[in-house]
Length: 164
Image (cartoon, rainbow, N blue to C red):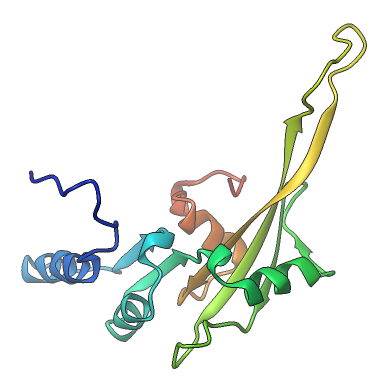
């Protein structure tokens, strides 16, 4: 095992590593569906296009903080489709402006509870504030938004009923 220097970004050399891993699987006779689940550090047109072109199903987190137009799209969205009391979603046609081709883009909203800071009267109630956390996933998977969310969150087909 070799450790990389602490000042190297996670995506440095990642596409070559991903290619090598899948090539090793195929060289060893792997038969089955190839899938990849990537975090936002690996969000790039080169990586997504390679996975798509190789027929590898994938989902990748979109670091939407880097894309003001996507953040604005999320903030302006009025209609969300409910999954359950915690999760909602919508699908949109979006791609970074510099990309040649887009892919399926799913936006998820999760309602989370956080204890309110400040003095509280513990014998009466515990004040809870609710806010939304958002997750944007680009994928070539054809499943339902719930299935994609389960896959992306690492639940796959083994997961229970909750998308978290």
